[in-house]
Image 1 (cartoon, rainbow, N blue to C red):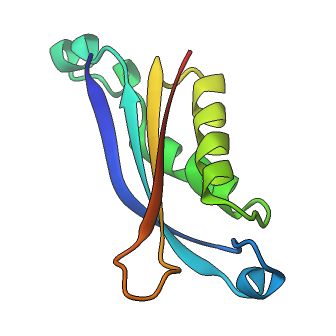
Image 2 (image 1 turned 90 degrees about the vertical axis):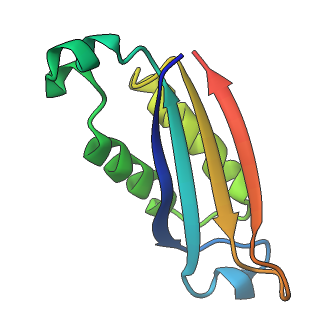
Length: 115
């Protein structure tokens, strides 16, 4: 299956288990893989034959900044639900990176969901 990949989209949001952690926005990096047939887009060179990347990025930003959450697992799941509900892909893989543990590059979750 073909894929559209958006790697490390940066979004600021309030997230964390404790109120103190949610008190200020934190940086998340979100990667999105959309599995779909891109054959028609490749043959036609028509934007209408693919998924508009800017629309996907805007949808992800909206989901993430919509409200505070405790877990990046919830963020990843909600992003997948929205993208699949809009039929933008047959399957999506979402990775959310958070920078909250000292002496690590990041903590991440990755989920895959299908239609």
